[in-house]
Image (cartoon, rainbow, N blue to C red; front, side, top):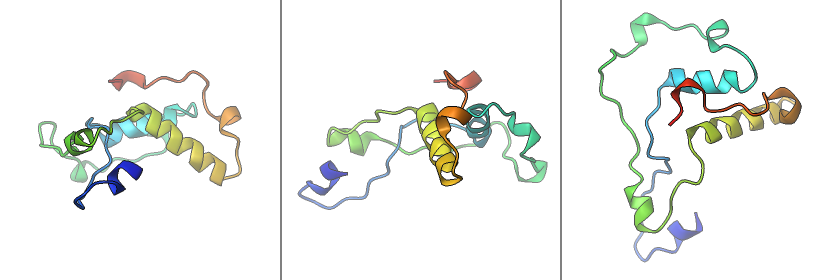
Length: 109
């Protein structure tokens, strides 16, 4: 953030890993990090899902790289950090709730 504020000209930045992932991948990682299967908790409405070959959007991290910023955390790390913070908000200790050594799952990049 500090590097963005030090630029001579103001600009818009999208903070991103530059990776593309599906909502399904997010659910797999989030629920998997606490030892659960997302399909037990998430209902998918087939009327709202995109076709398999639909275009997807992904933030482009090129502008951040231009000012020498790059992602230090991958998608799986970000999901686990989000889950850990949600657990803390619920008064739970992520160290006791989250699966130790859980990796990025079947869609790791």
